[in-house]
Length: 217
Image (cartoon, rainbow, N blue to C red; front, side, top):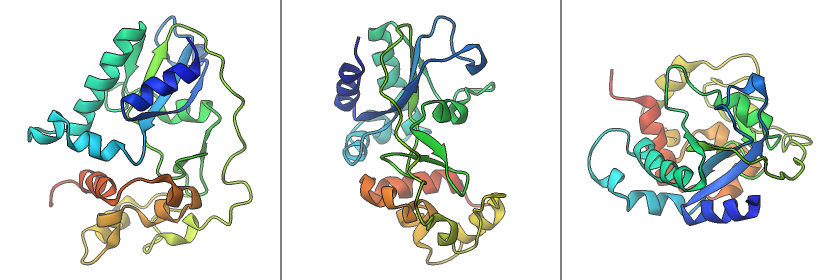
């Protein structure tokens, strides 16, 4: 089994392999795992594919999580692996630390994860735990090296900083009138130069922002 083959299979499912690593005892991987691959949306085709899926159209809660479990779970079964999801828990799988282990994903100046291709728009639909120890390419440098860090000043209420995340200030801003964060996604995430080239559609960002904000208080 080669990484390139799995990347091709991922794209056929509107997913992207965002990185991988060989877990050790400290990584809380399923027993017998040789490689963990982190999976996210393959942009910009992911959103049209998802909105055409039955999970989006049936009116039931958590459509994207259910889509992920069907698609990634079915794929894992064909590979003899295990599908893992950030929504499963408690206990929750350590997706943040797994992401850092890939070497392709880093902690940004505002502490959110940043990916060498997706920028601050990186997100995870799940992970594959495979018994084989795949050959993985060397990781590129952090995309934050040499970047002027526009993410640090993009938030209109300064909710994101290297020291803290002011969740209340963020949600108060989102509930106010006329914020484009609700329609286009977080301004700090959009400020990342890589995010601007990534291809995520505004409709997908709006979907995630509505889920993040939750129902009216």
